[in-house]
Length: 377
Image 1 (cartoon, one colour):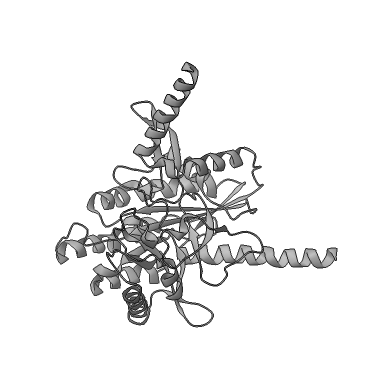
Image 2 (cartoon, rainbow, N blue to C red):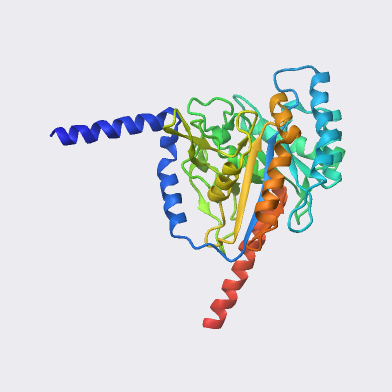
């Protein structure tokens, strides 16, 4: 009896610790991911696709237009000169993806970011903070904003049908009304609205330690919005050979999420690794190893992995860290570790390029499967 009480006590304490950082939401998925890694053979050559998704908010802190524009101008003046010194395995410069918030639109800021994109050093996609929203309003806002970016600034892309498409990050992490109290969104069927207005890819996750974090981690998968249902992206269908997007599905590409056992609070509790770049989450060699370890891949395709990091690059302290050595450190380490090694190939990519590569791999494998089946039959 005493033994059972002791075990119960340990379980309660362990669960309470997990709850402190909301790790209980995804801990079982994390264990499953680690176990799969243990029994997975490393391919002869690993293609690593690297993307930084910047929640770029120049008016962060409700600052004046002058302060906001100084932030954007600094990116325009300094970023390209830093990135120009670096190249991936194909000779391509680093790409910085600016997810610009609809509610902070500024013509002057957008012109600067559009210039960065036009020179081949990144791209602009869409970010949104909203509260108590409706399906009708969201639909109108997305269509209005995407058409303005494309027609006025020559941003975003069109698909084979001539429709404007965009990648998306949800402000405050509350995608598909996933906040437990319904804050920062209001639309239970948000995924469906995004998909119908041209969203081809969502990069919101991971959101840990927030309760908006999904059970599914380190994954590339399709989620489908459901009427009157929150957090539909909590689960989904993994992208795999021969299995591509079906009607009403939205591609989800998650960033790395796991535990950093070599960096512990009080020497005991492992820190979270959630792919964040900030003044208090600076890049290190150890973190780069974890990004590689936790990077998702297409199911059954182990030689292509996708690292998606996130930052708030217009926040003054983060801006300083990134432009005063942070980005330089990341690119140098990636190039030394991956580009210049025979068993790796490094690719600097935008969200659009990630989407196209995932689609290409899936459809190529689908064609190969069809050929194999034909030969067998």
